[in-house]
Length: 397
Image 1 (tube, rainbow, N blue to C red):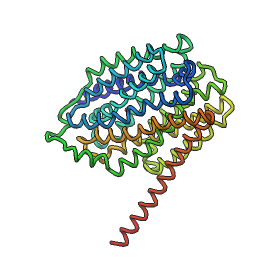
Image 2 (image 1 turned 45 degrees about the horizontal axis):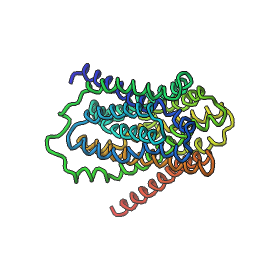
Image 3 (image 1 turned 90 degrees about the vertical axis):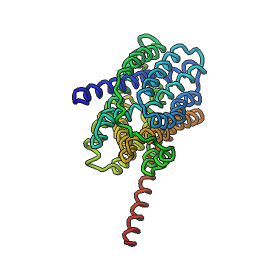
Image 4 (image 1 turned 180 degrees about the vertical axis):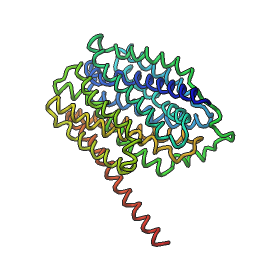
């Protein structure tokens, strides 16, 4: 592949990734307030928010394994765009809470195909540029989330609650067309078939399981807060619907900046595991502080700090999940990683919704903050166990 074609393939893929997540996130800030307006309580809202992660937990690993076995990523990407578009249209047509639950579940199935996106995009890069590849695609995701979530409140204010869903469906249709033109080479796959027992050994890789566990906690935090109940908290604090965009800006812009610099600057400066401890510790503090906020300015500031902390984590997880895995098995490794962290995407908002129903909306933020503290605790324990094992091996030698 020539440099020109490679650059074109990367650009087209990043545009497609942007469209995929834009259509999935354009309605996120208004989803929980919208569900309240049509009669959903906090427990039901938590169920709808959690269904997105549950579908990913159920489908991501099978998609990853099947992708490795048939040696193809592109069909899953096209399928993901189709289902994502169908989800938005279902939201727009929904006239009951049951249809809303189905629509969000479809969005989860679509998001489960992201494993194919990440692995195909990484195949456009050399091994030494893997972290740069993950940083680039993570930035496209964050920018899509930022733009989609920022315009959401304005669209509702101008054209009503259903407008973001219709726009997501239209953008998704454009993505379906573009997905037909992305490049996939069969040369990246070995000729011999992959054995299922080899795939199982990949899924049980200790480093992969550690990173996946930490990602459960990180996704539990972000899907409980910014992608869950933070917009509802902001409205109860006194913000108007159109002001939700400012909350999104304050979180997502620092989030995007951190995503850009996580692999390039912060990892060489701090090291992977030290950076994870620092970022989790900060996000725990900022999340625990959120229910104590009583002014708009303080809300914007805390969201900015929290967005930066969480933005440091996700590209780091993506690279660490597959950096030691052979290329032909990476879709399985990424599928396992994404399926495991999806536990946080459905358990986080679901548990928070139940807590909010009984104890008030502050309870969900205290729960999310405790997840960050839990991550720091486990990393400290792992570090000490590794030090003991190293000392023991030195004595034996």
